[in-house]
Length: 382
Image (tube, rainbow, N blue to C red):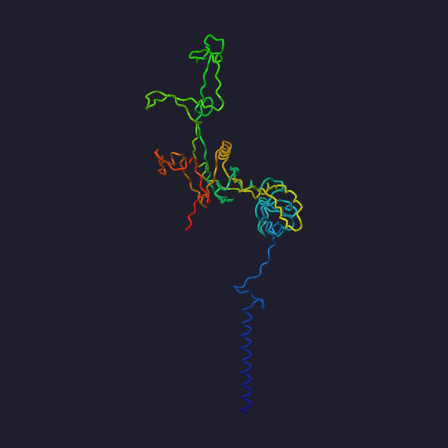
């Protein structure tokens, strides 16, 4: 009897535990996914949204690096999908055929979309013109290692242009170098004032009534002046012993000019014809013949200048002025103020005096300054 009651008690406990476990499972199921029983979603649950439709179109991009000036072919470009709503009208290319055969104005990196301002027609002018700012011009000047800081300046550098010129005094009417030549004038033969000794006419009427005595070729007959000789206390007539010496002056012509190119432009490259090599015996190793390309010649520098400065440099070049470049510091855009340099300026600024006239001098006589070579020195052996 007692054993039966104990068995029923155990069964009741098991049933209660099963009901409790089922209730817990049902609660968890309802709270995590209420939709299973037709309930409303929890507040922190979001319903999936439908993907909106996007209208896509093709645009052309670079599939590899395209160097400036390269003719574009189909292997260099491809297309990708791009939202039509984000496309600006007339900016991108929608077809590869629109780009093939065009020339790149700039270096184009891979995956960069091609736009109208990146390419040009093959015959669409020079690439250099796209590097010149609006309102500016490009002008080339000849240079050498001595006038261009040993070819140190390159494209993108800024330089100062220095000009040096020789000045002489001119007769305003004749526009010839002073001093003027002097001539003797005589009355023509047969005139009332003509004499056998060709006396100089002191009073005359018309110029065409006079004749001019020819000056011997190579003689100096410059206009002179009378000066009082202190040793004899008499007046002597003094004239120039040589033609007038020009005076040198140097000054900054252009303060700051960007360099567009050093040497010839690649679009204008021509190659000198190379002569055919002569026959060489088989026993002698032939020397390869290398052509000369004008693109490698650094005999000119192209500067970006204002139109007025372009005219100034053009005038100075045609007038024989010597131009040279001075390289400016990177990032230095300050205004440079310089004084014109003459012989007097150098003497004053550098405290140079004119040597005194002494009763002695070095031997041998030195009239020109030449730096001696190594073999001109006397080496004293120990």
